[in-house]
Length: 273
Image (cartoon, helix red, strand yellow):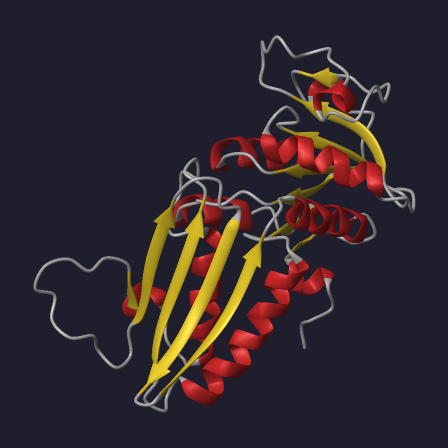
């Protein structure tokens, strides 16, 4: 079993989220910064990852492959792209490592591929690692059961920075899924992701989505339950990537002690059941 303070490696260590993850690991006394990976052939290979994160030298240099640091870490944290995350999941499975995946934008085929590893590797996969967001999901479950079948229209509104490549966000989709499942619906049947032109009035059972991409917005999500005479809004706003990074490190510490399986942040926080 990995040590109580797991040795953590970070993929994409030179990126915005990667640098924040380095800082989050360094702030956690129950985790050890063990390695970081940059793209193959990157000029940043060999750089001190503490310096990449603006923290000063930490004596741990960036590698350009997981193979180069395979003996140095227990848990890998990956916030990259679906293709890269799946390749890293396969690597962790083959080498007895644990993994935390915060990547969004996986399609149905990629999600099925990821799920195929549930019996081979301990993993935490969640579209949002924020503790606050995951508490919000529990609130949405309660609100949907109380309101969703009582004439309340349900809309999910999300906003992110201009560089985000997937839409709606993974968190928005997860919020919609929680609401839909609480009401015995599915997003495939009841999710409405575009409205344009003469689209007619909304149906009673649809769950609408609206997306904003602008500036440096870290992440804002609101689920609206609206009916005649009142509107209830459940909102989460993130002002720093650090909230996601700290959640990911918490997940890494937790999964270090788990058997093989596919887990999410609800498991990490003990919110299931």
